[in-house]
Image 1 (cartoon, rainbow, N blue to C red):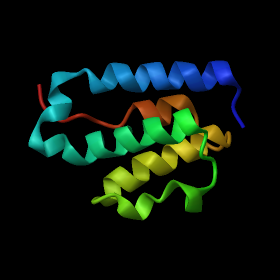
Image 2 (cartoon, one colour):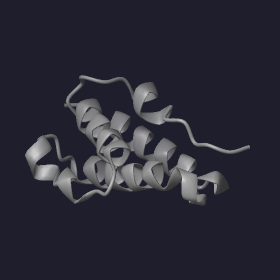
Image 3 (tube, one colour):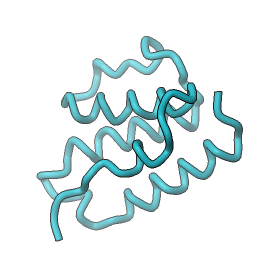
Length: 90
C-alpha cells in the first residue's frame, strides 16, 4: 500500500481537478462521479474492490476511475494514470 504522503498528495491533486469548472459540464458527469468515489476510496484507504461498492456508480467510466484509485493504493497504478483522465471542454 502507498504511504500516507503519497495518498495525501494524490487526494490534493484530485481536489485540484475537481475545482476545474469544466468538471461540472454534463459531458463530464462520469468523470466527476469517478473522482468523487476516488476521493472516498483514497481517504478511507479502501484497497479491496469489493469493499468499495463501485456497483453503486452509474457509469463504467466512473467505476473505472474509482478502480484506478484502488490500484493506486495497492501500487498497481501510477498517480499520473489516475490524474490524467481527460476532462472535456475548453
